[in-house]
Image 1 (cartoon, rainbow, N blue to C red):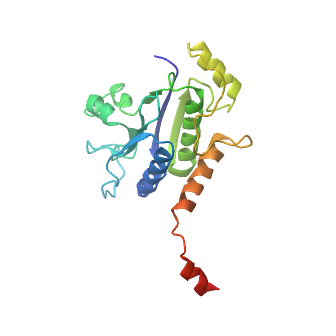
Image 2: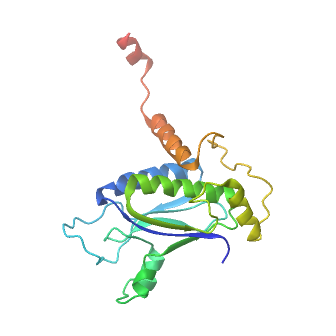
Length: 207
């Protein structure tokens, strides 16, 4: 299959969805990744149930040479995707029900830097938006943050990596920050840049 990561989880509060989508749209635009927004708000359901309405909510995006990354949910709040819903949406027994909630992304051809960045994104999402989350990372970066180990795992999977040369030209990661800190920094930077600037007249009035 090639080096990949596998994940599952549940959103902590359905009201978080619009903000989660907003953050990921900002990241996708910054890195010029293709993305698509699905339904932006969950239906107004009071009762918590594992049943779902066969619709998908959230966003997906595609970094260069990488499989598409789905941060999308069924109406029960669990991570899934349109493709998984198509294949397993009507399942009534295990293990088929479990397959509905098992997402995977191959990063083998995207390279170690993209893989590392995606781990940072999911660390951020886990702390900000998820109530439950499990990550199985074949690069062993999720649990270790070890660059050398990540490169070793990529090389063992047949990928020739020349160096950890950054592909993130617009706002590169700094030497003293980990991927999670990087994601937080770029989101703050994006929000700051989106704030309306005062005109010269407004500044003069304040003076």
